[in-house]
Image 1: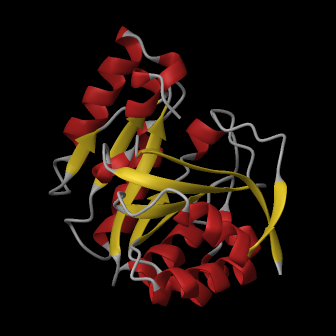
Image 2: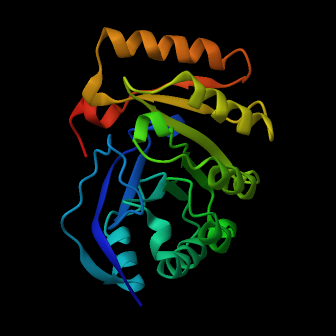
Length: 223
């Protein structure tokens, strides 16, 4: 079995509540969405077996917190992903899934092997796509037993009505699921700053853990 892997590298996590920790990143090629703010334009991949991928991961030694399975969208290659996760679990390596939170059936197949879930909520006014609230709801329900947080990219086009719908879904489960408002790095200015502040204030009326976290790796100029 082989998967299309764009790269395997070691760096710091730049997004979400684990920002700053060292990870080995396995970047899967291909995505099922085309968000207009996407900052990961993948044009190259190599086909690796599970064993070859493990070798690349292990080449970085043991001085890292976890392995981030990112993309693209890793769940598009779920059979390979499951096999890789099984091997990582045998090695007692912490596993961290970065996902767009849409492919809930595929997620069901590997959820038992994942430790941390960084789940996107795709606001339609941000992505320029249809909404995925039903898919996000089913995905989130499956992930509640894990260390899970939700991230929403906020752009100048983001609308409050989409944030309200996100909050409504979170409140169906828990008030304390972390909600990360991530400003679009390429649009950052005073206008977006004011929008982020307003969105954070609104969210904090309903949720107990709301954070504004920019992309640290972009600020530092690292991968």
